[in-house]
Length: 402
Ligand code: AMP
Ligand code: MG
Image (cartoon, rainbow, N blue to C red):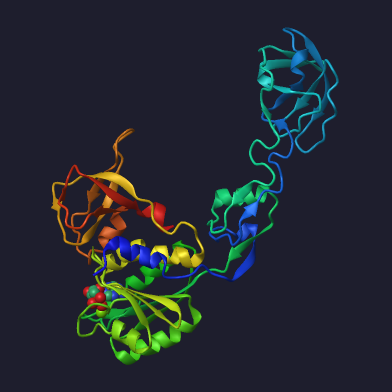
């Protein structure tokens, strides 16, 4: 059985970044991954300009009570005249600084009457001027290849005039659910059946990482059904996720079928709770991850082991979840041979304190309510006794999963 950290590293390295790239219009680039390191072509701001609605002056022309004739009214988007000595130019936020001016006096700090501006609050030289290049310099690196484009990154690229950006082709993921007991939501359910929740859950998780779900397919617990599913799904996807049927029961046929189709098993069983039965295989050069069927196990294994692989396959440079610290807040204690991941809520303890981590009362791997309730997974190290008041590591699911 592999330890958790080795398993996570193995999964993160179990695929290659994509080779196929495309140009994406900047308005549609949210969530895409940059396929090239991009550099600034412009200084930003491209010219000195005003940070305030006010008046541009030469600081040397200021004297208490002195009235400066208003030479021009220059709005954002207009070119200013050169400032004549002893005069002022009316400016607005974003107006370019006139040649010769070095200071902006905000309009609240003076009075304009009869086209003359009189300053009432002494200015400091250079006040309220945004300097050319103070934000970004031409030739600076903007973003490295492998950056996921969020709103901030898109703003940065658009401000540099990028109308299209080179991105990797979206990752195509297929999902295979297994189990004779499953019926899809929306179909009649007999007493011995349950609704498939893992299929929709995994589709939502994959979609939240901006990968494309190509197919969600169901197979019965027979060799033929599984073989047919693998054969149908594999050609069109870059990654196949299966769920259920990968443990040691009589009907757990996913692993033998995978091997019979020529799949190379890279790992099987990870020392984690929930989630021990996990398999990673390569078949036709494509990674297949087999998740345990219990919904909480599937969720935890996906969150901590599959996401690093997905991020690697997407070409991202940040495959691992950030590790945070918090204080376990519970009367219970924990001590497992396997690395344990508790579904917890994060409670703010105020400035200067680590957050409290409150475990959901039922930690069974079948308890689907805990997935709605929890905001994080707290990590209890294998073979270590941990109780309320102890500092533990945790993963913030909201920050990590999408
Ligand atoms: P398995 O790993 O196939 O033995 O399944 C373990 C448990 O997870 C069983 O109780 C299954 O009924 C349940 N399970 C497996 N797949 C799903 C699914 N897609 N949706 C909901 N429950 C599932
Ligand atoms: Mg099953």
